[in-house]
Length: 547
Image (cartoon, rainbow, N blue to C red; front, side, top):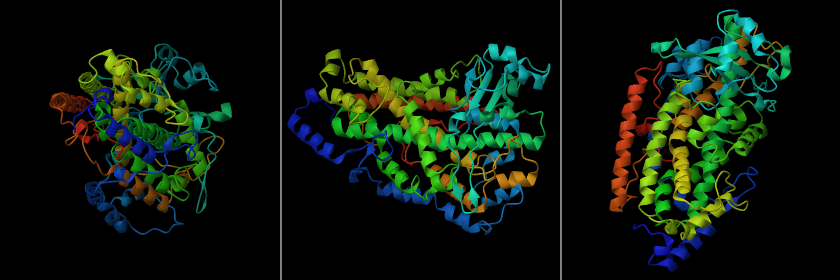
């Protein structure tokens, strides 16, 4: 397909007619999850291909064999030991995290390169509304560390889940589920693994909304109490991950871009040719998610801590805070104070992500400059201007952080780069990490099954086990997260025959070489890491949110 800007197309009438037809096929639904914009009916052209269905079926074939081999457990019987959860992997490979999940190193690494490395933020003063002062926290540590100095120099980090406190908990067969909403403090210290330094935990308050009635728990406390506190952080992080970082800030915020691109940008427009592979199967995938994952009685309703309505409210709240400009990768890192590698030398999600971000931006820049050679090419592109207007329109995409008029090429480059990164690397980072960190339940349960006492402690090991998901929920959490993370349709930067323009092919080859170089750098980075971070290796990143 030869690319043309609309003002240069030799067949403008045919182009206009095809777009008008698509505008009838791709309609908005603003009612499913107000105020978000979604597709009303998914056109058949967006459906999964035969190749996709066959490959995905093959890649997930081990799951039913695994679950058949799992020792049958009564729905009413609790598991007796933490090791019992390992029995759920008789066929599937056991996640490596099983070996280390109770350690502080594993707990801290998951803030930096786990399933949800998007919560931790740097602080230089204690969080607003927090009941304890830095001096009171210092009392726990004596002379072993100067927390006031660490706070002043930006070496203190926090994972704060208090915004989820509105979730009161759903129900299951035997009673209620619960969502801890703790706040956890960490410190970066220069001595540590491989002379690089390491993140260490300082304190966790499980019930911060109770003020000083809920004690600060530290690594100096009883090991069982400390492990339970870390487990509360993991449960909160799992709910934040699934509803905010994953479902909202990749799947749902990208959906309007796919709809508006189909409605306003012709198939042979250079921008459509660039973005279309990054939207492949996303609309169908999202619609199936609404029908089978976030439906009544579905996995979100059954497995996450809140009621279905509460879990969906996490999505809405995350959407209200999201905008394309503030959540573009480098800006989002900066907004959390996580962009400075001198202050925080070890942050694999940031370091590997920037390699891919820079490669994508270079590719997008070189590609778009092939077609927009003058400012007039940009301003005369009426399809592009209609695209921008409908993206932000309240009757259209309702996208925030985008101008309703594209006046410079840099604007368009920034938008396209953010979209491609979100659909590709960003989604890969939060989706494919689920198997390693979230299928072994004691590492990252999706809900608590015992109410936390006012002191926020667990008295004994039996109480800890009753705090974790029972057999059915364990099996279902493993099954759904394996299914979501087992299959990759394609590979970032490989677009079949989409780029037939010889000039674009040259740009694409350079992009693929940049990605290969990024892969080599990531492999080199992994040699000096406590654990490998592979989720942003380009060959393991898909182009689109296709699963």
